[in-house]
Length: 470
Image (tube, rainbow, N blue to C red):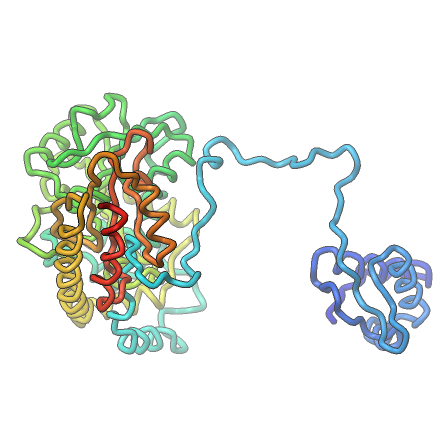
């Protein structure tokens, strides 16, 4: 048992010191309830004090109920009492500032997966070449690689900055130099950096409604006013943007969660709106790697001529969520501040992972994985669309990319009731209203993911919807 005791002079002082150390260790859980303590002789020898000092501390703790003795067995920790605040102290003296009460409890994905797992936003890790990835990471973790004894560049590993710049060029026709990019821990981290650098409490941020809830919550947590803007068949309704919006967050290539793409006319209208109002646009190129039809429109940032677009993306969906690596392409005037914000927040990312990812991209393994996984997802997409189209009461919205499909319910059907009933049958999907700013005014529909589901169970699982929507 490790016990740090501040020993004072004299037997009485040492008894009190041993008592205080034991009491503190019991209260904070370092010595759990039911643990057998060393004998007084053994603990005295370990601490370098007299046996009488330890015996006196034990006796006092027994009298106060912290310890119990069992004849022939020894001394044990009783059920640890709850540490009490002094009388008259406030019940909860520290409170979060306004904004944090809007953020829900963190959601963990470590629980058991449902049998029919149609949750959105989860890629199929079984499709990823972990053997090849493991070898790359192991090579970057060898002694001497990537200067493990020093801190790294907050902007990202130089090799990964170059690899991502090349990748964006051939995959999305985005012209970027390594010095234009910042490597992040996913899109959410990129949004956090952007908000820190561009926004002040009270500023207005416009987001798609329905849209990506974590982005909305992040902005709200910073004291920013978040305004939901409707989405139609052409994308974000620019006419609905508040004039005072300082920043607009959009998913133009694959609107989340409805699945459509922003039309070229609407993209040009949004860019002109941002130019005339000196606002910023954050373009989240969500799920752009997996497309099941013709090549999409070029990213919004390729049409930008006034330096208003910040382009963000992630490898969490195309690879696997635990890789937690994304990127941010920013106008030159913002990049120094964004790098400084990264350095202040967590200094830099995982150097070995970034170096391994650079090799994974440059050796062509990332492109091969996307092609292989894309074929699997395309087949699942077709089967899910067919199964939903054959389900009464559903109108499947057009989609040509990503890992989910959205379907609207006919009037009179209760999406919340359907989702709850499906869950009892082992079928996990999501309610469209969960992505809306105001659930009471949201369209009634279902969001059906197909990244995590076992392909052999697609038709069997979705067949459980039919009696619920008939």
